[in-house]
Length: 527
Image (cartoon, rainbow, N blue to C red):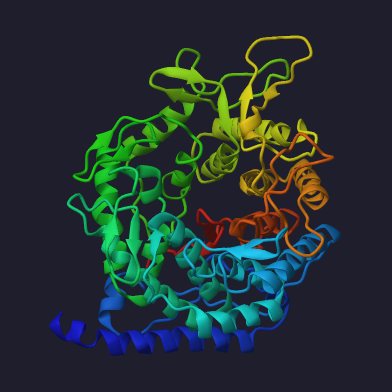
């Protein structure tokens, strides 16, 4: 073991070279259908056996070696997505290059972490859409300008899913070791967040000074956030051979599974306790979908204990319970929706963020959870579609309230003035992608096409980019908010492009798992 540790740096450098070399060798040797369809991947990845027993002891004997010429759109709808991306990218490139987010109306930019969030979030989208020129230009910026030694606080959850996840996905798709090196550097700078008495990480960390802390407004960390980062840290361990990344999650992951309260909106105290909070399946809870609800994982996972499977099943079924369930039916259209429970009182409120849930339920059913999960997934997907369709712009507001009592001339979906904005969010198209992939029902493609047309009609800024809007109920004056979130390129347009593909092997759901920010990571077979 001592010799192992002493040689780890040399061994790791050798591994990176071997993996990268194997990727490029495979790329040169590919011919036939695999070369023209670069993201079609065999279920069992090709083996690359690097040096060093520590790698094999960790079960890291496989790497996804893929043939990767650029992909091209195959139909008119996919071409429309590419055109939308090019327009959004043109605005970012001209007015916000290297900055976090584009302000398309004022032709300027805004910063959050100062780490080029939009650029990193969009790397794998560009590769998947076949935009090789744009990808290479962004790659050059990452190589020359992306530096993490800076005095800035980053949110652990947001920076993990966007930056770490984006870099890891870019590495897997392109085989370019630059992205893995940047990912390891960034991962190291996030590690101080895990140095807490309970091992449950702090929400924020300064990547320059290494000082981590809870949010400024509370001493708590949101359980939904800290459980949503296992994919990225485990993948980083798999690729680098450095166990500390996955160990950081494993130390508190098991603790949470044993002690986490039944409502996913709970938060943890600094010493590992839990504080009572509202129980939504929305803003905070939506983040928890990746590790706890999606069966595939990026490392070989032990089978879930039977009692855990039964608990998940029971909780999904309880959502529809007549007495205390969170899934009632609206009037007059009989829409199934997910409400919230606040201090024992039910609210018929549903965030657009909850629209991740149909896709999660469908994916769970695909991987062996009860078939009636798919029934609920379809019902909730219909509701999410109506949340968009019943608005005058065809775009969903951020929050809706459902009508529970039959009343003349009242729609199912009611919107308060403070909630009628649209932030270009991906959750509806995300679930449309999963539902289409898993059912083959083309109505989900048609619904996605309606959404893309609405984005183009009401959020597109002529000079470049797309803007969130303040009023989805006023098609004559939707009131641009002058902000294009990074997830519009990283998630919304990516899911639309994949939704419009008729090739189930394009980023197959049996081969890849998407992280919370829609960055695909390979599902590794047990070694």
